[in-house]
Amino acid sequence: MLPRSEVETTDSTHPFHIDAPRREPCLVAATHAAEAVGVPVDVVIGSRRRDRRCTSARALGMYLAHVGLGLPMTRVAAGFGRHRSTVAHACRKIEERREVAGWDRWVAALEESVRGLAGAPMSGGAHV
Image 1 (spheres, one colour):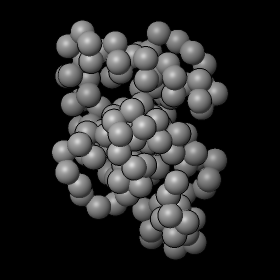
Image 2 (cartoon, rainbow, N blue to C red; image 1 turned 135 degrees about the horizontal axis):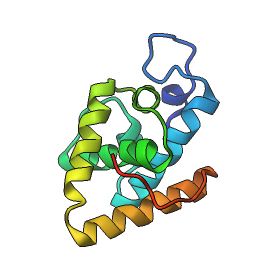
Image 3 (cartoon, rainbow, N blue to C red; image 1 turned 30 degrees about the vertical axis):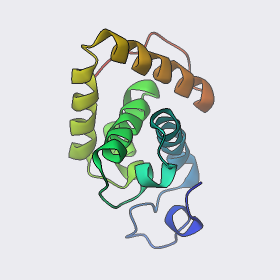
Image 4 (tube, rainbow, N blue to C red; image 1 turned 90 degrees about the vertical axis):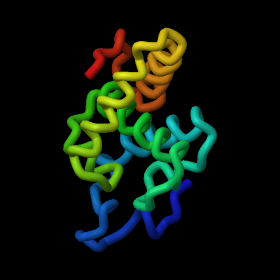
């Protein structure tokens, strides 16, 4: 669970100042990525730079939000407190790794399960 101060803020300059319904799908994707990688969700959605494992989980969360849930990159960027170009870079990195069969199957399974958790329609999953 994210610390209340990071999630619920009235400061419009804070990176997590976004309406709860708009933020929720990103939190679902971030939580799912964190659990899959084995890191706390606050390091996935948090604003601090972390080690490679945490940044990989964050990239996976952004990818799941964009590709798995079909959210526009701009909305994913707002939900993760990042710039749109960061989301684009993260999605490219995850997509590049999908060339490996085992990784591809794992990410595809995560996409399907995050759709189920978020109540999004299930599909074959369009890649970036």
